[in-house]
Length: 224
Figure 1 (cartoon, rainbow, N blue to C red):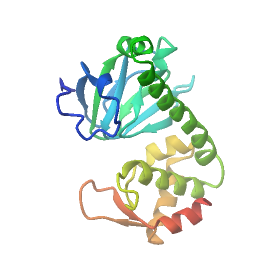
Figure 2 (figure 1 turned 90 degrees about the horizontal axis):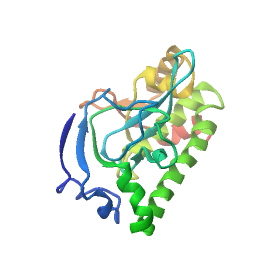
Figure 3 (figure 1 turned 60 degrees about the vertical axis):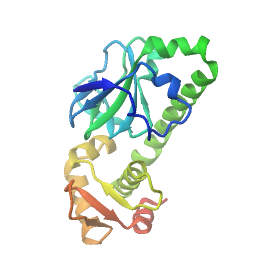
């Protein structure tokens, strides 16, 4: 993990108005698969994602892992620490992640020093909670084929700054299975069907798992 002062790191960060919050924060880099925080750790830091994708993992009593949320650029991690002493999930970098990390005590002080900014943070948290409903309805119901199509559409939406872009970098089959609660083999079969039907066309560039999508066709399969 690499750390540096925020400096100009947030010049293009899409959270206008949050500048006072980032003063004194530390810019940190996390490599793919690196753990940002663990379930049960003291919730003492809030992180704003500048670049990259982060998965939140929940573990069942028997040790099985389920990905319960994905967060991308302009999302906050760790806001639950405002009411809970420990993190509820384990956060892991999916790819190279850049984030600005701020001590939770600084966030808590905003309630008195900058109530407007504090309210904006709570609104962001509310949006994160709303996404849990989407997670349940889109990724836990319907046929496996429809659910995989919804997940591909979701990944394309959160990865692209340009709304008209249709490119997507897929997660591994293991990660997609952990989101959908199905077998790895089932995800692999569906993706193979999408490729044969030209709903996913491989782009010859790095990363290797980047594809051009046929969004209208995927939406029909997803029953959106």
